[in-house]
Image (cartoon, rainbow, N blue to C red; front, side):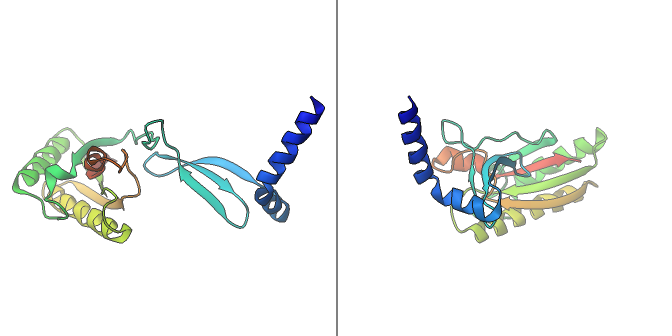
Length: 179
């Protein structure tokens, strides 16, 4: 038994040698789960000088997210906008006006509008599109008297895998967070 343990330890030391060397340099090696602003989990290891991070995925490859409980509405992007556009359709403007008017009647007046995209296109283009879409929804909402802040994450906070058409469709969305 003792010889098996020593072989195992030697094997692990060879495998983890870069981490061990880094831990010697900095004096620490920390692993954790980081939760981003949207509630999605990421595996993180801090090596002192630099670190590594990867999304925590479930068995189906979807991100593990504990969604913000203050999300009071999620509009699918395909319902509000044409492909790669940030101009609200007429039906979308009507739905947004109706939604925010009812929220104000019910006593909710302050909101955060957050734009999201799928991973098609560049990171920068997706952020710009998500931002422009959040601004378009915010502009329509402000016309009802709602107090609006905006934010955008582009493709950085998926709620589904971007490997399928359905997953991409789910990731193209505008979230309304009640504040």
